[in-house]
Amino acid sequence: MTKRRRVITTVVACTTATAFAAGTASTASAHDSGQGPAHSPKVLNDKVIAPFGMAISGQDVWYTDGFVGTVNRISKGTDTVVTKGPQSEVAGIDVIRGGDTYAFTSSNDDHSATSLTIRSKGRADVVADLSAYEKKVNPDKHKTYGVVAGGKSCAPGELDAWFMKNAGTPATYKGQVDSHPYAVGYLGDGAWAVADAGGNDILRVDRHGRVSTIAVMPAQPVKLTAAQVAALGAPSCLAGATFNFEAVPTDVQRGEDGKLWVSTLPGGPEDPSLGARGSVYTVKPWKHTSNRVATGFLGATNLALGDDGAVYVAELFAGKVTQLKHGHRSTVVTTERPLSVEVQGDYLYVGTLADIMFGPSGPPVIKAPGSITRYHL
Image (cartoon, rainbow, N blue to C red; front, top):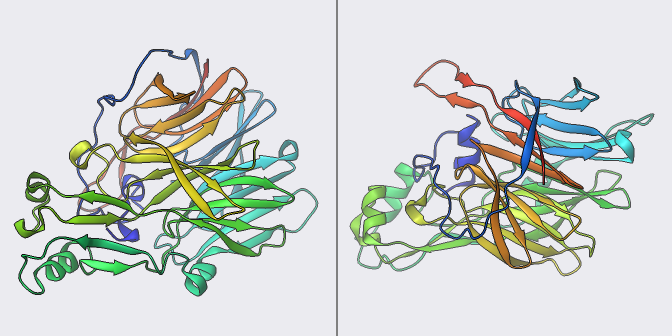
């Protein structure tokens, strides 16, 4: 589907729902093996709404609240608003030099104005205009999405008409101009990596705010079955066709070897109707290439890298945090709506999304707030 119809943004009412969206799930993935739950939970915040991103600096926990557009810091038990973003949504956050320098992403409601702000103590802000870069370069403009094989038995124009009505694009299309920066990670030497969920790419922003492309994430192909097509309400002639969904990078972290670790949503329904298709990739910035190292996640909205080689993945729609280590995976935390995750030493930090009810009109209703909780591994 189009970049403007992401499931992750649907959850927080930033865009309209995707035509392929379906209900969320709370069951664990069948791929899980072994047990190793974290314990001794300590709630650090029980009033947050949408903690899209977190960063740990010393004893301080930094996080963004995407619904209210703020960067916050929890220090010695006190939660303080550090800054309010220039736009309505603040998502990604990373911190260096003990908090003297931090970077955060911002987007307005329709993602026509997006940016990365680098803020350093005693210096003027550096603001990278990510939407301008997307409009000028559109890094995924040569990628083909939508129906890439099959569907030959459909009447001429039938698929295009259905997709235009239900998704706003032709049945097959090239990468469009859209920017939705969702996460940021420090690269070193004053540069930052940005996961752009709208642009389907990982960007580099240097200390002067200059933007370049590190990698475009791969399309996410699905061969549609007759049952899946029927569930979508799509023309039956679509059965057997291969549909390239767009990648939706949701986090980026730099490993000690210089590789980047990236979590992705599959660009379509996050429930099991098309399979649990969220993935984790490694990206080699010096080669501009990516490699998928794990898949089968139900809503991979964030990841964290442990010192021992473990990778932790927040599965928003599975209600758990999964650990990947030495080729094995296990559930370490089970909780409702895990949205973000960080790790430092023996502690795992999990941010959960508020229980939000969306009506046909009026503002959304917060049925229960989210939280930020620290667990002992």
